[in-house]
Length: 362
Image (tube, rainbow, N blue to C red; front, side):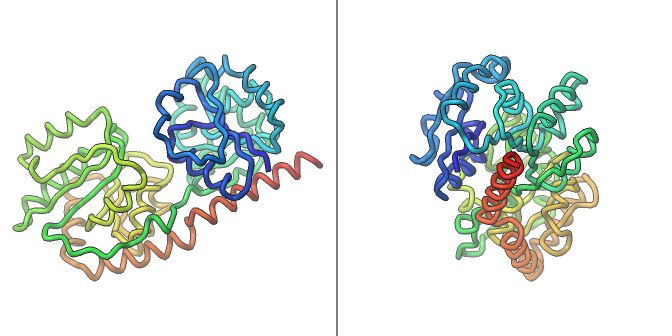
């Protein structure tokens, strides 16, 4: 199948899709904004994937690139077009008049974008009504699309963004001499890293053998978070590793005793799945996306509130009970294999492509 894929060349999510589809024998052309060309020199994209950088970047470029994209579309003659991220890329696909079109939602494009203004809401509605099919990476996201846009009468197809269970798997490791709490997340307000730091501080003061907190990820709050650790007197035991390549995340997770995600809002939970696949017990705040991924009391813990004392209490309980940790770890890995194995997810996407092409031909 010839697939015209509209997405970001520097996104690990995009790269996983196009690489996997090309490895399965599809002819994939990735089209992305021209502002990404200089940033994508070190991306790990398959030699089998063709990449075209449009003249303009993001923002107004989603409108200015429409003519160029239409020409590429006519020259390439794809069987299917898949725009990943329903806002900017959805606008570009609609204005370029490409068909048959699948628009894939990722999260903030439905949980945030349409609520910023009435204009945004109308733009997104135009995009999804133009598309031949709409996909979302989680059940929570699919429900939100139907809730915000009752005008959209078709089903939203769930195409999970799962885990490479051969990369993310448990590894033999010695028990840490000091307990390690960890998180892998971009350092911006919505992910509420201060909540974790406050909880860790409480935990740190309760334990005779002081635990460690590993924070992986860069972002605008780095200095603020470091200053917070200094004020709490725990900075020597909180390590900020910055951003690491996706290929190193599994090793980082396998060095943790407990994995935490504490977002204020989340439409899914890929990082939690990665930890579960490594049999590391997880603790997460109560968001719609996290509830979809984590079975509370079976594969991990969903916190009943956002108080740091509550998180600290649950972390301490886990660190003092290896049997419970093992139970969550085993069940977590099993759940990922059953529901979120990446190879199965790519097959779901292929089926959506085939069904969309079939319906278009009727």
